[in-house]
Length: 112
Image (cartoon, rainbow, N blue to C red; front, side):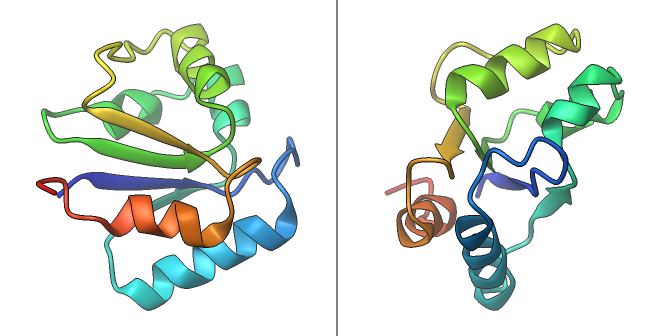
């Protein structure tokens, strides 16, 4: 099972509140383990060392945030190696996808 990372987008405010709230509510209801951060943009700007920890290990990581290209750039800008293989890291775009689509991707079994 992949790790799940949920970005609250508290400072940038580029993700619709309704989508963020629905995804968070559904994540809590699902019982899935997940890590929530206030704002990946802010963490990257501060070059927060926890960004390395979020991608550490060999397991997959599913990130509910915004545009995949922007998330990859944020990690890169913070000096964190973001795998380009497209297999281990899956960024889900809460700016364009609805909460049900996000949740389906977040909670589906990685072996499917």
